[in-house]
Length: 315
Ligand code: NAD
Ligand code: UDP
Ligand code: UDP
Image (tube, rainbow, N blue to C red):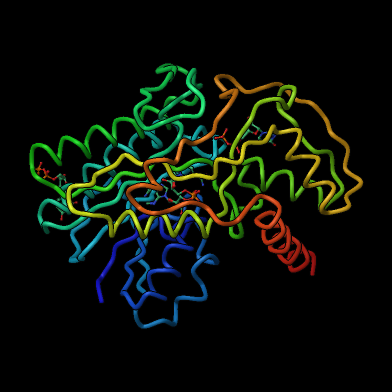
């Protein structure tokens, strides 16, 4: 049994990771400032004697005694990370410095939740880990993209300079239950709009693509990466290679819900990547990992979750 720190543990992915680590018999220290995370996401864990919840902003030092760290603290939806862009960069960069300082002091493994956004608006398709990306350093997405790129730099420098045992995963669009209903990301937006029979907001023409991974598959990838062979640092892509246009996603969601929603077209946000699909050959080779839940099945679980949530909110 290990004592494991999960930063951002009250968020969408963090809360699923806490569930998984507790189920595997570990103790979990969940640290979150509740910027986008919610107590509700971990409410069911509060009575568990192996679970501890600490309200703390990861841009400030954190002195705790743990055996492993998963660093997930950072808003992930463009709406949220652009709300206070300076704080977003600080969270990625200073958060990385603090968890790396902690890992260095304790001589423990630390996993960084990086992102496919390090590839920016990619000219190479699908994206392998060797692709260096096309990020606009002064655009409105840069606070997130460059923050995450700098965090990767810090991880690799702490590794080379101080011998810190690092594990870096680059996550591609992941969805599922416990996404915030006002999260702003495409899957939650479309499902909530369709359930309410409201207009479905397509940004641009809807011909841009994304590849959507269900959360349980991703968490399995996290755990395998943490357990991977000594010396394997990544970065490794984690995502589902199934690629869909945003229009296809909208049509699928409307169809599955049987919604009366109509499509409306809104301006495409600045620097919105046109295409995205992970090359997961490295994850297959090193982690023996690939996603098992395809879009329709994952959407069904997610629709069920939002249906319940809206019903309870209405009650
Ligand atoms: P989320 O917004 O639900 O979770 C982020 C969590 O971090 C929230 O609980 C938030 O309150 C917390 N947080 C933010 N700033 C903090 C700070 N300064 N101190 C402490 N806690 C802070 O988003 P998510 O989808 O669960 O993303 C989790 C991680 O995975 C993020 O690092 C994100 O960048 C990364 N990621 C997610 C995706 C995805 O598609 N879901 C894709 C790429 C990368
Ligand atoms: N740090 C932390 N928890 C720890 C150890 C370090 O939050 O358990 C912080 C520390 O406050 C510092 C940062 O991590 O700001 C980087 O630590 P490092 O030892 O690399 O740097 P230094 O303290 O030498 O500046
Ligand atoms: N998008 C959309 N309507 C929405 C929300 C998002 O058309 O209500 C588009 C967005 O422009 C982008 C894609 O869906 O092209 C994925 O957006 P999201 O914010 O989920 O993730 P990211 O852009 O970070 O991949």
